[in-house]
Length: 573
Image 1 (cartoon, rainbow, N blue to C red):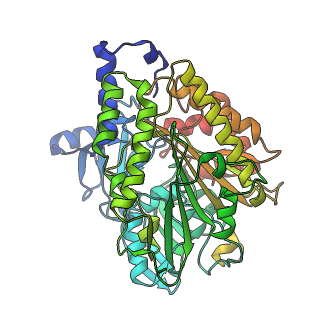
Image 2: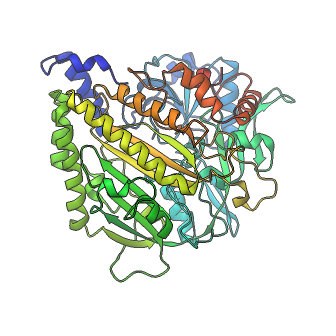
Image 3: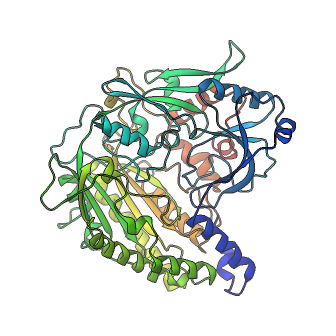
């Protein structure tokens, strides 16, 4: 969490610089630590634990290192039955169970910072064993929730299948991605028809059925149960926020496509993010012509790194063919000038170097695109959709989705970026530099259950891109994230201003703001996930009746609250 009082500390304050250094070290390298369990200690602390399920002592560390907990017990069941055995053990012994995949997230939906090592919290790792993949029909794949998105998309590609859009990191597990309605960036371009088995919404919208470990009143125990997409209970499990444990899913998929991705750094933010109705190279104009865009706008710079994808069955003459993902090594491996600047900012409290760092990041992108010949690439979809490795700079990120009409996208982008720019420069004029990363902007469609082709399919209850029943004209979501180094002074206060702007400007009248579950939100001036009004009122009300329905379902499927984390207690109180 950001400590606002840090702005009053000087470079010579060793306690502050050590804390900042450790945070940045965690952000640059986050490798989980596993320690073989002493059988005697395990038997004493976890009596009668299911035989055949190995136990280890583990460290949990989230993406940016702001949540780091060591010494928790962890296990890796080999299938749904073993998962159920572990969950029943936890219930009977008054423990909680927290599913763990890649730990690639920001919010404390797994465990919060400060969780003691002797907490009765058991991590259940999905990655070692819950990774099966099988075609059950030409357009249906059954997948274990521990499989990574890179492994899944590679396997689909080998079978001539793919998805419309996906998150940039390939190391996410499928289960983790579905728990927080992970998404890519895509809306249909002018004249584009959706392919069967594809969706412009979140990955959760591809689910046909899922298997979760839930309470069974008849047997008086937790059991694996399969839910189909047309069942009411399934709607709450499609985006469950870690409030359940899903072991396997069946996804509707479609024919793979080849995508061209062109990167541009020649369009000024003033033009790209101009007011609606403006001529020129605006976000809206590229959505019309291509449908798939992403803007990465480094702090205190004028020219964003702007990516535009298009469906291209044949390789364009000027494109470079790519046969694997992660084609921006200058982004995945932090360039030395960027690393040195980030290090100075933290260890010397030289936060005023934020403009220099922003321009260094832009320079690295401009030069890197040329040096690696990656400004215009083409290949099977996964090779341009996946572009972020775990070796990239690890930063804190807030996140929101603004529901609007397709015609309203430019307005949302323009108003948000204008507010962000004004506040960033106002802070800088006062000698405060809360942001040293980038603004990231993506645009997707909403979750339309009809995309599954299954009659009676339900929409994911808690997906940020669930349609709003009162506004059918809102068919598009603008995703907004702002990134900064962990520990940056004044960041939480700045994020709070951005959040309040979005919640006020798009309060359900001209659009609707929802939080992005995996990122930072609910800011006070000191910390994220701390504003009780946002947690207790704003977030639930943004989902209308679907919130209470989902909360009741998740409670009924886990009445003993085995799967509850502290953040769930505050959200679903």
